[in-house]
Amino acid sequence: MHLFGSSTTAKPSSSPHIKDTGIATFTADVLEASREVAVIVAFWVPGSGPCKQLIVDLEKAVIAANGAVKMVKVNVDENKEIARQLRIQSIPTVYAFKNGQPVDGFMGALPESQIQQFVETLAGGEGGGHNHAAEILEMAEQAFAAGDIGQAAQAYAHVLQDEPGNPKAAAGLARCYLKTGDLERAKTTLALVRPDDAKDEAVRAVAAELSLREGAAAVAGKNAELEAKLAANPNDHQARYDLALALDAEGNRDGAIEALLDIVRRDRKWNDDGARKHLVTLFEAMGPTDERTIAARRKLSSILFS
Image (cartoon, rainbow, N blue to C red):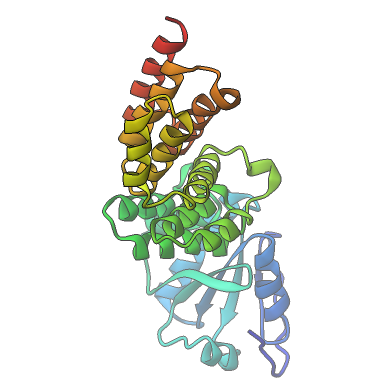
């Protein structure tokens, strides 16, 4: 977004986190500044009671945030070009900018408590408010659990737009791609995560799931052939291992776990402990609190320590 026009002199403010702006300084004060911290832009006109009260309440909340968010005021009477380009249709109007883009806002006056919550959310939960990213991530999880993969993907992508590299959002979006069978996009999305966030539990789970899907590609759909090999030789551990992969590829994770446990039961050290290692990958993908993980770990411990 680029704004050009005649200059409007910015008025001084008693707080370093609050200022007036005009067409000449809007880009620096809002678009560029919002790449470092959220910037609230309040559009107002002189002589308006609702505008005056809103400004007072906003300034109070911004000062309390102590630098976690900034505020910029735009006098619409003096800056009609800004209002036109941002399509301001009523006064007062408030926009919040992050990374050079508007991400939230409202029109009209709000109770002081709601204004405080609005500011605290943008500040990332400072002062006891709700964390906007956490709320969106929770909505995404609920959508995913309900089977609305499209809605979940949009929510995860929204968080990534605000917070590039957010590990839980990247893991969630990658999981959506896995659900639709798009392994390449899942891999690309996981690559957005910074190295120091790669140990995040959600990232590790999706990375493990991606590894499982890639490993199963060669044997997917070969169940009958592999079962025939096992019928002829129950100790054909490679066939049983491949069958576990094939079962998992078709969504039968319980069957895959039992096949791998059977290999450990028959030959613990087969293929350099390959069956146990693959079980560990499954546990990683499902997560430590999944009932299947807990039950399978107990069975594995029973076999290993019997």
